[in-house]
Image (cartoon, helix red, strand yellow):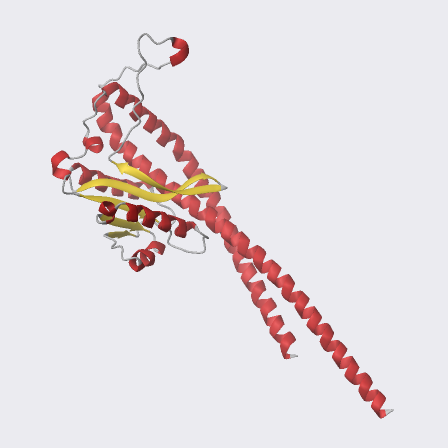
Length: 299
């Protein structure tokens, strides 16, 4: 009797766990849909702005903007800055582990960057970095699950100001890049110095069939002045896109992890139910045998 009672308690506990994980899966699915829309909606703006900066860079030629070249001699003794994006909550599968393993591999292979400033977003990376004796210069806790553009812009502007004045030599962001609902990969992004893709200009004697259609822009004001206004915007948009990718990747990982936990709890419930039925059947058989044996002895 004690065995069947214990099995019933386990069945009830597994059922409660399954209800909790099912609810968390539904919440993660809802958040994933919203964050995916935000991440996808911001990508055209970021990519178009990046393309425009690249076209302007090709028109300007040698770029001498501080966000591209740095502060010169003033930045020679400056340190590198690395921003690591993790989550505030767990139960999201290998999400945080993948980012932190990528971060440690990158820092180990670059001792100069590890000796620089390490900044962290999210609570889950704090204990890991402390265990690995990686000092955290700043722990940003103002973003949460829904980072707004204003907060990300303020952080990007702080990096831009510090980089332009030579306080830091470079800025890199380690985050989970969202590629699709089935694929996310940790990535090390160089935010500063900003490296726009400068496309080579076709030669004058090159045939049109080889070069294709090359758009020609007329800039007013000139390309250099426009580049000075667009480069900070491109840096801010790139950092905001990294935050959006990190958030949607976190919700995908949690959705998959909770679905797996729900399925495993369902399988465990069915297994315990079979064990309970067998134990109950054996108990009933034993009781019937005892009753028949007692009746036979009295006869």
